[in-house]
Length: 105
Image (tube, helix red, strand yellow):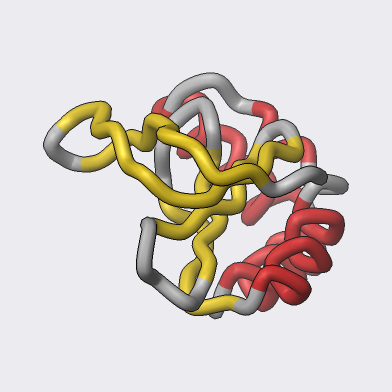
């Protein structure tokens, strides 16, 4: 994942917003920080949801690799995400707990 200084778009509760800063893409995630910030965030590209924040870039890269193995993140919208997460919680509680532990930043 290559980090670049640029303007990027991020989904927020107020809609899509442009930010200046640094960003790297590792589908289905983006690792980013606003200009002037020291710590990084991981967001889900399709939904704009913040997965984790207050990370150093090295830790963010490691976490993205770990999270990428969970197919629940391939969901295109929040409704699909909710259904997939509920399904994971009910049918595979061990994997669900592992996922929650990872994103409990």
